[in-house]
Structures are given as structure tokens and as C-alpha cells.
Image (cartoon, rainbow, N blue to C red; front, top):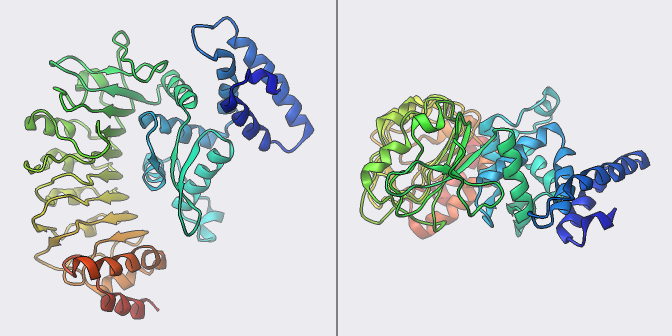
Length: 408
């Protein structure tokens, strides 16, 4: 079968990953026969380099179990050679509804995050994605990335199934157009986007438009993910473009906007974001946000809220987080204040709690949550940080010991 790979190492690796999941001789014979069929489709398509080997990769996708196919296609959101963070990816999968728990898994104490990680690991074992970085202590996957040819396959399949659209920003008020699946660096100007469900926007500092108009994209968008040009900090050409990133998205489930900060302009979140009542994932990390508006309390379906903003001033957190009783991962700003102590006892599904202070929340509320994973994963790290940054937002070691006593 290796001869069908035509000397392409990636095709050999992917074919090996495919065979590794087959446990009987009959399964291996079936793969051998199917490889021949797939390869025959590749002949005569010399305009695409390694066209014959690309059909081996296509076989690896077709062989994926039903539940893994949307997880694989979702990887097409990310730019070429992008280091994909495992936690961000799996939480986006959960927000999209790809992950579900059976009663058996629930009774065993397994979480949706555990299932998502196992599925990610299965994609790694099938050699369709590559491990980037592992944890130095637990050897768990921290980041992953895609092979270029598999990313091309991913974009092609996503386009065929109307699963995802990737667009680049526009200049001089032109319409935004999809990135071609055959070449991630080229833009296709002929095909309209139509009614799309998921949109990834690759930004540029000179963009005159940050999101396609409602007429271009349709009103069915579920996921909107932005990627800045420098993979760190960016800011739009004109400040008045910012509200367009939050308008006309009433059905949105996932919104990721990171690093929007020019060091000067403070961003006022528009009221329209409070209308996204189906939103499950909101990430505004490293953006220069002016305040935590009370209307964020309308987002009662939120599972992940990452509000680790870069504003140097103490922002006021209103007591509305308690309404988000489906929250699983909560990241508060490093520095904040509150008029009243934040009520967190309603957050019974919480898995991650970051940058919390006993000055602005009740430790008894935290003890009522009863999820020891929160203390193992977050509190010890925060206690260490407080010795460096002070107790303005993070919990001190004394407070951590008090919580330990409460949850025992």
C-alpha cells in the first residue's frame, strides 16, 4: 500500500494512522482495496501537486467516525501553521454542541472536557493532526497544528459540506470574499458566501471592513472567530468599525476576538452583544475593553467567558455573573473591583475559576460549588501569582488555605 503514497511522507504517516485503528485482516484488506479506488481518482489531476497522494488523505477523512468529522472540519478555522491551543479548541467544540455525555459517562464523573480531550487525542492517533506542545508535568497535549496538505483537505471538505467559510478582510469598502480551499493564501472573487454557519476572519491592519454584511453572509451564523495578522495585538484602521463585529448575530454560539489593543483607545462594548442570548463561548482576552457592562448578564447560555482584558484601570464588575449558571470556565480581569460581593454559588458547572478575590466574592459561595477540580487547577496557581502581583485580584495563600478547610 505504501507504493500508493508516491514517496510523500505525510501520506505514509496518515495511512499508518488509518491502519492502526483496524484490528482485523478483513479491515486491512478493505483499506487496501479502497486505497486503490481513491488513488485512481487522483490520476489525471496533475494541476494539483501530489494529487494522487491527496486521495490517500481523503480516505483518512472518510474513515473518521461520524462524531470526529465535525471536530476535524472545525480545525479549518485556524490559519496555516497556527499553533492551536487545546483548551480553546475543545471549548469551542463544546460550545458548538459537538460533544455530548452519555448517562454512563456522567455516572463515572467524566466531563465534556474529558470527552473532548479524548477525541482530540484520537485525531492525533490517526495522524490527521500533529502535537505541538505537551505539558511538562502530565504529558497532556497543550497545543496542536495541522499539516499543510491536511489543512487543504479540511478546507475543501468544509466547503463541500457548507460547514465553514474562511474570509480575508477587505480594502476600499470591497466585499469580503472566501479564501480558496486550493490555496489558503489566495482569495476567490467569484463564489458568493451565501448562508454560512461558521466564519473565520483573517484580519489586516488596513481593513475597511471587519465582517461580511448581513446580505453577504445570511442570518444563520453560529460561530465567528477572528485572527489578527500578528497573532498578538491589532487594532482596526478606524474605531467606528468595531461595533460591526457585534451586530446582527442573534443566533451566534461562539465569538472570539483577541488582542484588540493599540495601547490608547479603550473599547466600549456595544449593547448589541447583550442580544446574543444563545452565545456559549465569548473570548475577549488581551483586548483593551473599557468596562464590564451589566447587559453581559443576558448571556445566560455562556459556558466560557474569558475577560482577561488589558485595561490598566480597575474596572467594576457588576453582580450579574450569577445569572450565567451554565458557566464552565470563568476568567476575570487581573485587576477589578465590585460594589457588592459577587455571587458565584449559582455556578454549579464551573470547571475553571481564574483571578478571584475574597475582597469581592464570598469564600462560602466558592465552597458551595463543591468541584474540587477548580481548586486543583486554578487556586494553587493564583496563590503563587498573588505573591508577585499582590492580593488586588488573586487569592492569597491564607485565603487558599481557608477555602481548603471549607471544601473538606
